Image (cartoon, rainbow, N blue to C red; front, side, top):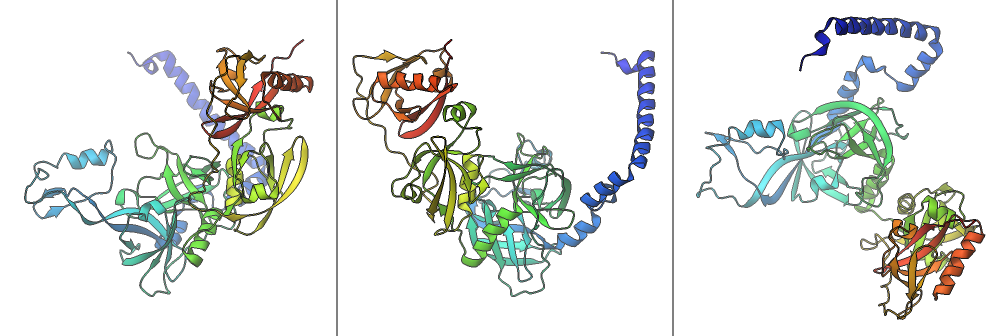
Length: 506
């Protein structure tokens, strides 16, 4: 296909576009000159202007950033690149250009050798990054960097190698704390930022990508509060500074040289950087590291409830003004929440006066409280606002989420009744509630995920034991002006709430 830019008409268009760019630049300069106050304000907020570079910042913080090496008993294939040359490179993706570059030299030196079989053995490999937070050698990194390590060595910027011990790890937030064995009081260190990073703030990431040693990249904070389904406590900063394998555990700095995040994950279809990386915020990291330094482990508050998020249908069905809050599906019997009076169907909207928007946010807030501490829960129950004081217990490793009782076995009754929302129900002969026998394919109930075999325990906030109870609850929701009815549903022992839209009868 011919290049259309080569035509005379396109040349004229291109020339016109060039003129417009030049004119726009001139006009832009004029606008800035007429608004010096705005320009000064922007410069003051950012700190050093972007065009001045980050050289001074990097020079001051780089000595505190380390490469983390581990010795671990795992199978490793030793690749020989020729006489007297062995190279065990870090874990490059299969489609990485460097992988293809090295692989072209692999034969014949990497052919199977019966005298040198592959077998599990100790090996040392640069696997991640970290940063020193005290002059005596406490070092922050990721849990996944050191979780399988039998020995840990850190390498400083000047290539000094120091043996280190693992003081403690926290798999839930993917953080780990190391301490150099050698008695030192002169190591360079950096501090966590006292203020939260804002979207649009500059960040400078320093680390050890692909085992290449101290590497610096820069970008901005792209988003906050990212949930990547890593744990119940996801609250990541998203940054667009280039972060790759080996950057894990390394710091992201603000323009003042303070750590705003601990790099821990990337989003990448190819295994390399695509401009989306995630860092643990400084406030969360500092809280966890402080506990690891004091005790070697992390304790978290335990409330003892199963939760789900609200949506517009549920919010309307429950008579709420919006969908902010965490809906309690079931409190654990004997746990702090149940003992304090929290009930299924309650919507928790605040903790100690701090608003709660989602179930995950509630989990994070509770986890940040100490076991034994009292928290004040703001609860909405039946349209009324309540304050419930709860004394938290300690979260154990196997209490990540609250278990639910097994649903009773179903015995299908011969008679069934179809409801006005397209659900056919029968009495639950093996327990309380109604069993969904069938659902109309084009009904709103089907679109909200209800399935045959589900047990409907409540409708519109009340218990139902017969098809007549169920239809009466639906009619009551309509008469109250609601556009959806709330159903408490049990499936395979898991309780949840479903908001089913109602067709308003004329």
